Image (tube, rainbow, N blue to C red; front, side, top):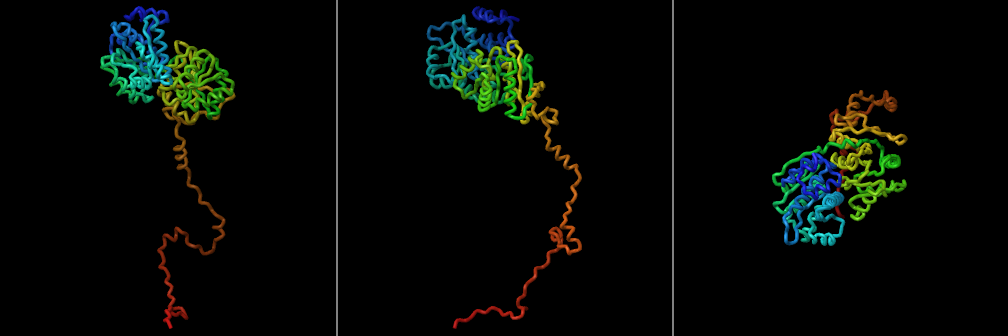
Amino acid sequence: MSFDQFPLEPALARVLTELGFTEPTPVQSETLPRALAGADLLVSAATGSGKTLAYLLPALQRLIQRPPNPGPRDIGALVLSPTRELAKQIHKEFGQLARYTGLKSTLLTGGADLAYQASLLRRVPDLVVATPGRLLEHLQRGNLALDKLAILVLDEADRVVEMGFGQDVLTVAEQCNKDRQTLLFSATLNRKGLEPVREALLNSPELIRIDPQRQLNEAITQQMILTDSVEHKLHLLTWLVANEPADRILVFANTRAQVDAITHALLRASVAVSSLHSERRQDERQQTLQRFRSGRYRVLVATDVAARGLDIEGLQLVINFEVPRSGDEFIHRVGRTGRAGEQGLAITLVSDPEWNLLASIQRYLKQSFERRAIPGLEGSYQGPKRLKASGKAAAEGKRRKKQASARPAPRKKERIRDRKQIGKRRQPAAADAEQQPAAAPKVWDRSKEVGFQPLRRKKPE
């Protein structure tokens, strides 16, 4: 199948040819015909499957075919994204696809000047790409109206709900045109809290499932290295950065504090490195990504804010300094490499407390990772001695308890002082005394004593 089989506008067909898009991916093949026909869609597709193009092309087609309006044009399409990085990527891709259409888009994300964004909205762009929180701010201020919206797209819906933006999306949907077309894309459809969003946004949707979420990219080699401590991980990370033949390396950690600690450690090792997390200002994040793409920084240390929507050409190595909290996040992290048909490598550093978490991820993905050891940097931890069928470590405490119960009873300790009392009258032990009946208490009768005189009170003289 080729893009020529879809009834696309000439301006879109031309730009697809120039950008080198010849054959659609599976998600594009399934989505484009139904989206172009105007149906509401619920699409489950893994990261890196080409879903951005799958919803931008129908949105552009719908905007081009809008009837002429003698008055000011209304906002025709809205794309909601969970993160700023993904929103910026969508905005950039729209600009490339719309180069021959005359259509304009506006980016609305947190961290940017609210007044400046309001001035852009007064020009009434054809499409708006936004994060839910910032879009809601503009709606509350009356900076834009969505009552004439033709198409609404919610990208990475599972991540939107996970980050707590579900209610914001529902509030935005209430102000949108009721007759709009809605396209909802999600890596997984069983995320807790996603059901109310699906029911509120979609009208008799068609379901499309492409590439199960648990399927890892075959172009990515998965490795794991066992570690003893955080300090051991830092030594291993420094060695990998110095010896792995990768032009760009992305390192993931679970917290902002750990990201800063790793960055400082690599700076002390004279590594060209920068960090990316939600506490950094938007202009700093954009500058960091630009310098990482250009090669000024060889290593980027980030939280999961960079796990989605970050498309960097030539990213050959991803290192999980800490095991991610779920299998879905693991897929999104390692999915930053091995893109566009290139080979990639993903290395996960695993300590003793993280073994069971990684075992759960391997079982979720139905894949075992290759063990690797760095000569001269091997740790003392070699994994659990006993494993359950699930791959998790078997509890050692129960085994020790069973072994202790099988041992013979310990011999009674013989004291020297007990042997010294042989032949002497033994005082009853406390246990013996409890078994014998208690003797009646002796009453002291002082009247029988000689010379006893009862006490008499003297009379006053």
